[in-house]
Image (cartoon, rainbow, N blue to C red):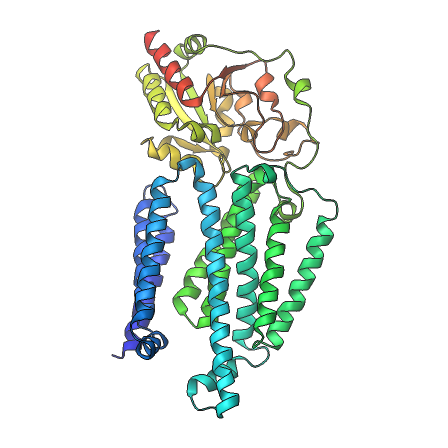
Length: 491
């Protein structure tokens, strides 16, 4: 069997591992195994790519330094990736995902740019030497107008640039950097986006008509970079989980397009899998928020006028101590815990498990209500609770647990805000109007653990905090739960 056949077989094995990995990562019990298989598939694909004929010809022509350079780059990348995975806090996972999406888009863009540079150099050899090599002749054919190479190069440059800069803006928003906390609400932003979109279409056509033009390609990348920024800057509030999913899809599409540029089948397959899964997850997130994708991209949740906090909270907040709340829990037969981003910030998942154990020893049933967009990315709360070894069967999705809230004696909200805000149901003028929420306000007693009355990511007050059946417990999430557990055990 030829060496290329072995390479193709390795690519097939890598593609199969990617598919199985995606399947396993769809469930919490098998997600870790899926990650390992996906990493193994990528290692196989990278190793096989090193034995492609163009790579071997380059190594032979220039000595061993290109292979050494690849090894050094791979080692540096692996070290950076491992350090980020081990050191980055769980609260920063959404930001990390945004960065990885952006790096994927940037890598695809540079791959397309490098391949274009190589082909234009080979095509130039045809003009100067009369087509002395098959490589140069093939490059000249690829650079003809409206070829697969030209179309794929244009799409890779555009999607990769939009992904990279859009992801950087998303990272800045998730980090709540001062200049990015507020959504960009320039009234002319839609016209700016339209102008940039038309410019990208013109440049795509230019690249397809004249694929040998490096200038047109990089002009497309620059305009696409601006479009990535202006599309993401207006998006605020609870729309960010949707944006992360969409950017993830973009990074996959850019990789798939780059696969067509360099004729690499495994890159096309892997990119298509990421792109498709990202689009499916985006659709799920939009459905969970009762939002359309167009509304997310061109509206911007959290950018409209909300109710005044003083009007909502004035004279209605009832603060309670750990001892007072423990007295309520002593008589509870069913407690529902609602985790939110504040739980992630406080790293209170293990303390929550201790509280649940103390309640269960008293014969109380404890469940966890999980909103699809709780936290800063899909699955954020599931990962945190799994880290504390909380049984998966106790994690109940929104549609499943909402009808049972009236039967709950106590609902304990830890750091959640927008996903439990009843204004989504009651106030048609609210920025989150129509967004499905967890109906915690229907429980007999609601305990809300927060540091303060500060708003959630959507930037609006929450009438739940002032409800007649709500007790506010103002403290750090982890300390509050530990104190509550101690008070319950002493009771």
